[in-house]
Amino acid sequence: MKPLQAAAMGLVIVALNAKVNGYDLLADPLGWLLVLHGVRLLPAEVPRRDTIHAIGIVAALVSVALWFPAFTDALSDTDDSLVWAATLPQIAFVALLCAELAAHAGEAGDAKAARWLRVARTLTIAVGVLPIVVYPIESDLLVPLILVAVVTIVLVIVLLFSYSSRPWALHEEPAGNGDRGRSS
Image 1: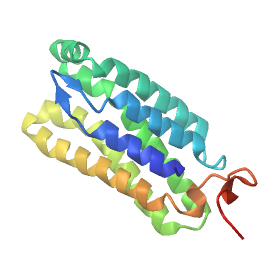
Image 2 (image 1 turned 90 degrees about the vertical axis):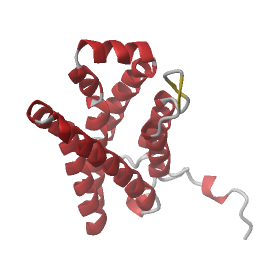
Image 3 (image 1 turned 180 degrees about the vertical axis):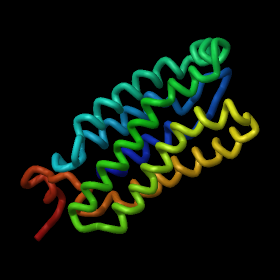
Image 4 (image 1 turned 135 degrees about the vertical axis):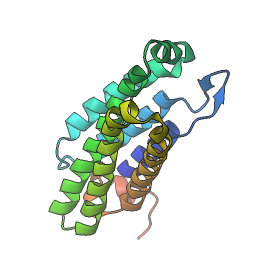
């Protein structure tokens, strides 16, 4: 599997919810393992790849706690902003991934991909910051904000799948591994 395909598929698992008795059957920690695998496979030239991976580990660990309904309910009962705060590692991961992939794509001369990834980065940051602004002013604006959040993660997933075959997004396989099963 290509690095961006693994990351995109992991984010699909993270984004989708199939809850039974409060538990998500598509457990986010499993999605994060796939995301982290994809990040590890990214080319070494991707700026801050290790930082992206580290933030992904934090997001994965937080997702383990959030998988348990009692934990999420306790956060929500204490203060709704704690649930939002618990999503910040995920938001930081997606924003940084998009930013660094945009830089890497730009360096490789793929200006269109770089522009779209910067758009995704900006939308992700907005999704992370806007609840601070919107919630105290008008809680009715939370529904449109949730819609923007959904559109943003779908955009990120589509971009990752779309760019997964670009040369700048592929890791180099050791010599000989790419020739298995091929005949001359």
